[in-house]
Image (cartoon, rainbow, N blue to C red; front, top):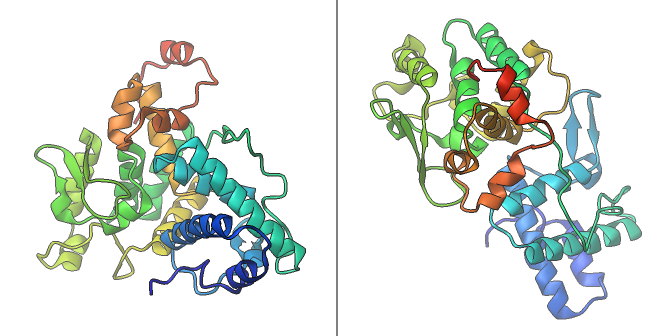
Length: 314
């Protein structure tokens, strides 16, 4: 039987055994919790689920409980996966029921769903993207962290111009990168069907130097290996987060950053550089334009911004 971090937990077993709701509703909610568990597992290995010590906060150096921000991330994942408003509504109701029970019986200390909005749910518009100034800082910092091999720089430039998801980056192999046509085929680690993204000139040049560097040649040994590696091993999400954190620290970025924030940043930078929504949708590989629109922040006057910032982004 396939492992699921939520369904295998004592939290779920107690909830399923003792919750007083109709069996049909319980089974619907079970499906949501299974999906919730799969989402958690996609972010990296979790040995044991503990909602009271769920996320390590680098800024305060302690483990904090699961919170609304993590629920927001899950809802955003559902939106990007094409979930309808009805599905999102049901998912939030299921999580409300689940966490309310856990808090009521003393299995968790705080309920992340206690004040979560439903039924008139609309994902809070939080601008997670880095500004152009901060994006430039990240690129500069990535060179300082790794001045000779410049793997960190290639990695950051890839995120900021191609908008790949973390798993797509971790699993990407050299054969997927076509420098002649300046494209990357996304055939590994993607959530939806395979797709293609464009490679800008600056990234093409960085890749050419990277693939001819002695450290890459030593790593690949002439084989079609993973493009990125860390301390002699292919990237997984934990190693990727560790690499990116070194760049954030060097750049003086002190807020909590999700890997997915770099995907938001790419969308914003393209918009600021004059790209239309459909071009951005194509680069993000979204099936629905509504998902792309969620990434774009129109709270500032972009026309005025572009008027006075004619230099090219990145």
